[in-house]
Image (cartoon, rainbow, N blue to C red; front, side, top):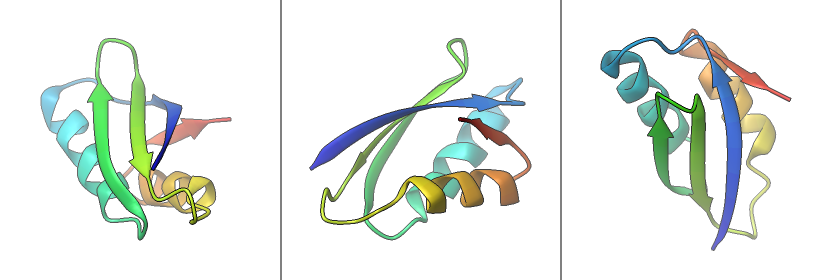
Length: 69
């Protein structure tokens, strides 16, 4: 397993936090996402054999938020 921390813009409440977590965890190869509303980040644990960065950004975008690159 590997870890990746991404910055997420647009979150303002616990509902946002939950929505971003669910979006990220729906990506194939993602094991778990821990979202920090205060820090504006998502720490993602994923199968290191998978390329998930682009899929995570797309899933977050579809949920109405933005991954900062």
